[in-house]
Length: 326
Ligand SMILES: [Zn+2]
Image (cartoon, rainbow, N blue to C red; front, side, top):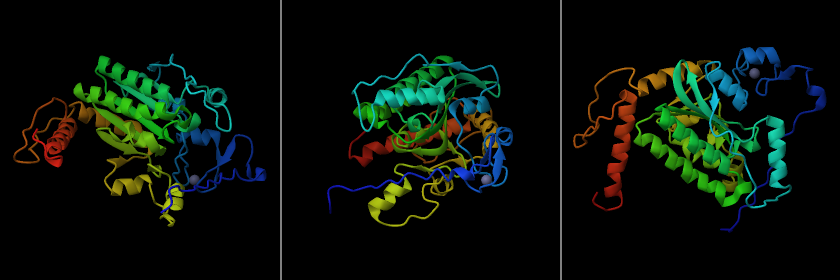
């Protein structure tokens, strides 16, 4: 077996210029129907013909989820630097500057405190337009500060992900952010505060392998690609054709990787309902999953207690998995 795998990446064709339907109108990427900007704004970026979910920018997502006038940014003062003096085909500082100019954002994670259907929430949103929503040092630090803000306000955490993974221009420093965000979530769990992740198209790599999939409840948008390595890379590595549904949200749901797939028009209402359940809006009694498992009440609603029970079970299995007595 060879030591290296050669991966060939062909850029997607942007389409011929004469295919552009005109000013203020674009074609749906899935069904090809022409759509006006007003139509798309009304449908929160969902094609009214085929339900294709267009990617949303972080400010658009905040506008969809946060109650008007409630947004207060957290960690916006932290700005990216180029600690490795990194240069691939272009200098990292140039890529950063261009992304900032194009998106109007200072980094890929927009984080803040807001109200969601009247409930205080710490909300983080990754913007795929900013270097593929990749996680560098600033994304990790903003995520940590957002969790600290959630803990200080005793507010639940909601994070909307769309990311290509760790930011390669920051090398090992970006990989460290995987550990950092996981530690931050431990802090949240220790406070008994719920965390809901919303996975939008695409959520891959180091983001999928860290905070995106560690939530108490994992929600995804229809058709979103959610996998560690993209289908093209996997196909070239294993030299096999993959089925078209590979890594899609619906397949992840069928395989038990997700809790639900939710249409964008129902997202805010679903988050409101989930947070209400997790925070103890509904009372019910729970039986232990195993006879020898002691139920430790931690407050919160049935979902929070069930999540705590699963964590206890997972921790209790560590002793016998590694042959140690706990
Ligand atoms: Zn369509």
